[in-house]
Structure formats: structure tokens, C-alpha cells
Length: 290
Image 1 (cartoon, rainbow, N blue to C red):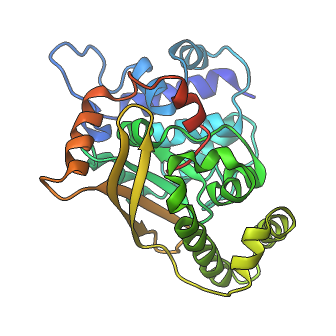
Image 2 (cartoon, helix red, strand yellow; image 1 turned 90 degrees about the vertical axis):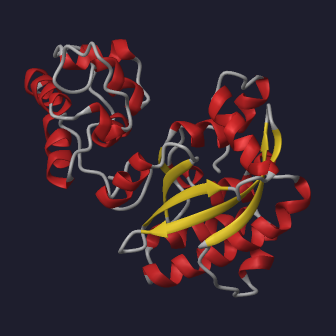
């Protein structure tokens, strides 16, 4: 790994980004042409000290997950992302799926504009790639896991704790929606081994999944009405919308509520409290995906 070249590259990419490009205020006293180090760290979900060490050419070799997060924070295109992985001596991750996937620029650009509503980009297997702050406040960050467990659909049928995001009476509906969506994804991917392995694992572990899979219901989830359990605000009723990438492998999800509704009022309150009132229940909700 070439620490000095990686450090120089990170700094060069940081210097070219304007705060407004990533939804940050410009402020009157900025002394750097682009983002501050701590701002990049915040956008990537890293500690400021860790990122500073990387830019100084010191520290441990960053993982693929860290590199993918930095690529998103620095708004790198595909070639720039590949160069970042090359400098860190890491193999390139899958281009369009998996937790380390490179978020498609069009979706990331739209996510940057959604500053007043919870929004996130996920893969077609419901692996969370990136969230805006309101999405983190609403549904919590995804757990740091690898393999099938990175998929919220997989956790839904194998980890009872993941279901706390929705009221118990809504669980049958979401189970049906998740399985019908996975059927559609499996058909689109045409025998993709990643999907085949996930379906086989779910059939071994969940009789509920088997029963629903064998109905052969197929429907991509484009919109849905959700009741989300928030640890501080209680149940929030929202509409969930999906925008698909051109190849269907990634989705931009955002949550909204009609003006004047209780859901809209709670979204406004959520934007005020952020994550500051997330108590012990937030640790449990951190194991879920919205």
C-alpha cells in the first residue's frame, strides 16, 4: 500500500468539493477550498482522528468498507473509486451490489438534494449503501455485518430483533412485500448465484419464508405505506417511495407524509431532535434497516 500517494489523493479529492455539493453550509470563515477533514469523516461515518491519519499517510490499511464510504463521501466517479482501491491495495468490490458497492452517481446526486426528508440508497437485496442524517435518525444505521446478513430481507426472516422497526400487526404485510420483491429481483438477475444462495439459506432457516416463496407472488416494491416505530417519537406513519437505477440494482428510498398530517408533524420533530434523543432502544433499532 502506498500511504503517501493515498494521502495525497484523498486531499486532492477533498479540496475539489464545495460544501454545498454535499448539503453542508458554506459558512463565512472557511479557510480551505473544499471540505474540512472532519466533514469528510462525518460524511463517511469515520472518526476525525482516523481520517486525519489517512491523510497524513499514516494509520492502518483501510478496509473495503471504509474505502467505499470514502468514495461516496468524496463523490468519486467509477474510475476515481477504482483508483482509490488501487492505491490502498484492495481488490475492487462489485460495481452495483453488496454493502461495498459504489453508489450510482445519479442516485447519490439526488440523495444530496433530499435534506428535509429521510432518504437512503439500498441495493436490490435491501443492503443499505448510504443514508442521509434524517434516515439515520428515523430507522438507525445498518449493522456492520457481511454476507447475507447485510440484507435487511435476510435479517427480517432470521433475526426477530430486526422487526422492531414496524408494529407487530404490520409484520405479515411486510413479509409478503419482501418476498414478492425478492421474487422479482431473482427473475431480473436470471439465476444470479448471490440471489440463489440467499434464497436457499432463507428456505433452510424460515418456514414463513418458504410458505410465502412457494406462492410465487411477484411484485417489485415501488411505493408503500409504512408505520415506523421510533424510540422517542413512537409510531410514525409515512409513505415510502422508490426510484430505481437504470439497471435496477440500486434504489433511492425516501419517506414523506402529506402536509398537515400527524406523520408530517413527527417528521418535523425528527429533524429537530435528530439522533440526540435515541436512548437504549436506539441500540436495538441500530440492528434494522428502514
